[in-house]
Image (cartoon, rainbow, N blue to C red):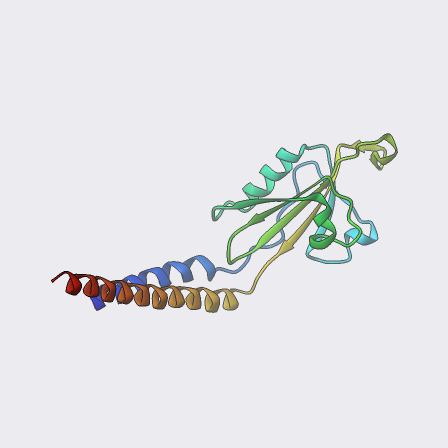
Length: 178
C-alpha cells in the first residue's frame, strides 16, 4: 500500500511540475485592429498596455482567451471599480475580468465603454467603441515549482493523516461491536 502511495505522489508531483515549470509567455498580442495608446499612464509599466478598439467586450475577452489557450483558462469577473486596485489607481472602467492560469500567470482586461457623449473615445480622427487596458502578471517558474511541490506534499501528508485517523476510527468502532 505504501508503494502505491509513493507512486501516486510521484505521478501527481510530476504532473504539477509539468504544468507549472514552463516559462510564462510574453505579453499577449492585441486584438486585430486595435491601436495602442501611448498616453503617459498607459505606458508607465511594461506589464500594462492600453488599446483603442472597435470590438465588443465578448470579442476582446474571446481574443485574450485564445491568446492564453495553451492551458485551460479560468475567467473571473470583478466589479469595475476594482480596476483602480488591479489596473491603475485612476483607471476608468466599465468592466474588469481576469483570465487566470492557476499557479501561473494572469491577464486582467479592463474596458471603458463610454456611456455619455462627453466620454466618447476619439483617437486620430476615429471614434472607438472602447478603450481596453491589459495588465499582464507573469510569475517565475522556479517559485511556481517550489509552491506546487509543497502543495502536493502537504496534500499527501494531510491525506495520509486523514486516512490513518479513519482507519483508527474504523478499528475503534469494530472493536466496540465485538
